[in-house]
Image (cartoon, rainbow, N blue to C red; front, side, top):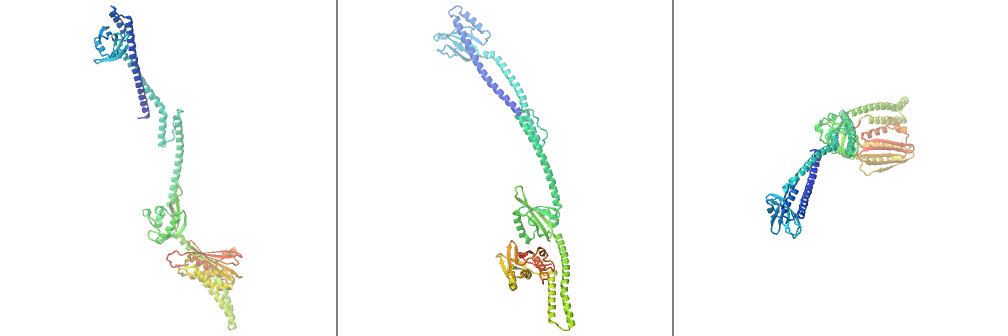
Length: 598
């Protein structure tokens, strides 16, 4: 049922209630008026009879009848006027000789102390009004007037019927008018409801017609404004949604067509998404990958993977980390991995995106480049060796010619020739270290022990040059996987250069430090130092600033440190000194293997 019908029905019920109450009140008032009218007419009639008539008069009965008939005109409900003797309980005279008057009077509850009584009496399903009058309390004569109550009600019932008909018409027309008025009043509400339905159906363009300036009109205005704003926001949302969809499709296309293997992991490393290149690189299908952990990680690198996860959980980005991964066929391939945390709107890490690049082709290219550079270096070395060997050979040839001419052995000449042969042997030996691959076997040694042996060996030479070796070693674990003799060669070469750089004596500081998984060896002299241009050329074949140097010592040292997966760095300042920093990876409790240096 609509609100219009509910309101109309409510108003009709209220009107009916008001009319019923009004009718009851009016009926009660009308009855009171009727009682009052009968009472007054009875009292007036009784007074008139008492004053105008004399019961002792011979014409009393005729006069009473005349008064009765005169009064009864227009009053059919008036039944009789009776003279009654209270002492003898008999009717002295009845104007209309009403047959049951004596029976009715006998039922009267007579009050001897009242001058006038008015009451309602029933007799044989008939209802009567009875009026009892006497002019004083000691009088035996009572004037009793009888009325037919039913006739009285019928006489005045026509007025009630008209009243009821009028009320019914009023209710009917009031209901029609209220229905129309409520319809007019609720029309803005219907328009608002229609607009709400339109908005709920995502139709914003048709506004509510505003015909009033009351609260409904203001509400309609606000809803129109809200609808317009929603339309603007919906257009923006559609635009943003289309843009996001295009961007999503673009990113999906980019990811799926990327040559790098891209996959998404949750916080515990479970893979939940991958691109096509992942399947091509590792051979696993999407069904095999989704829900798996560490699927491509070799068993001996699980700990490495867990360490990486602990780092990225703290928000760190793993950038271009080179390692090994296992394919579905069991092959180990070198890869470069970049792992980035994925964050939600509250900056909380919810997962990780990993980009895995196949490094096989790049490693092959780098190997080709290294071989090319090596061949180029060998060519340079060969040219340098030829040049360096030619000088002592020329000296040997000259002295041999002198020996041939003199036909006798000159000891001084022999010593010079042996010295030149030793120089040739030194040059060829260092050249072989650079050019010939050497199989080395790494063992775990404490770098402090190696340095202690070297300083013991170099101590006498340092004393000859008035140089003091000062050692500062950390107490942390300084074990490294290494080839001991090669490292000794590096340390000896660096210490020898530092001692020779201080002709007037001084100090060589040797320090060993540990930071995370790196062992640092710092060897610092207080010598003459080097200019920047000279420092840049250190390590070039046959470049030396020493009178008897070959220019191959630092080159050999760099080669050895590279074989140990370390770094050799030089810093120098003129008239201050030079520092050689050697960085070596610490021992990781992993099984050592034989490696070959190139």
